[in-house]
Length: 270
Image 1 (tube, rainbow, N blue to C red):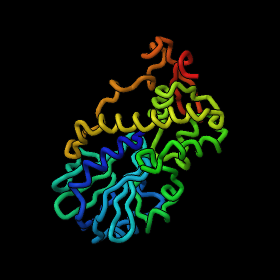
Image 2: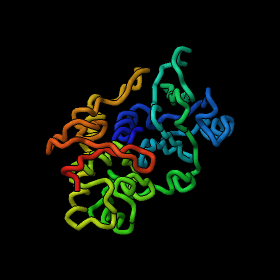
Image 3: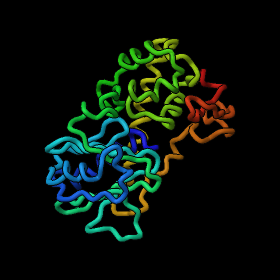
Image 4: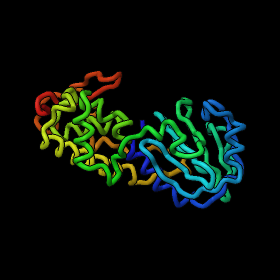
């Protein structure tokens, strides 16, 4: 699932291409993509609505409009495509927004992602509950300490709780904990001040390094097959079960936490 670095890369690349344009028409091809709203109500809310800001909140791409906001959640396979006209029938699209000079397509073949309009961020349940964003200046060591000190969750689950820390998911939580030399099973409120400072530094550096990788090359919205850059060169534990730790040569282990996989090195993450 795209996390904050991936969505931030999309945001930065998309902004100059659609900012200031007006949505002339919204056509929903697969109504499931806009649930729980109807295609008709969405089209009405978006008609002649101007895009005034292209931004991100957590794992959500957000278009701030003259009236309300339009949110995109990509889940596992969702993405944005741009067309000069109506896309050929061979290309799967879930919804199309006709803008002044380009057509924006929301695409998710698995139909897990969503495109929704809301009156404001506060009116969007998924956004109003978000915690501090990992790219925000407000995400300081003190802020992280407050989050962890007030939680008894295992570290991995605390870091991926979007109501506490927005934008970090399965991949970058595992990577950050490896860089900080912390076991994902540790109770959050048991960290020392030095361990918390180490973890904060690891989260920030991991997120920014991932953003660099996702932005070079930038997403090519004209390519129906585009996807994010290969992160393998920067990954230290995620997806490396049974392989040697790149720090201590121990064996990387995979465990289940909250129904998701966590990767770590039992030898050097304590």
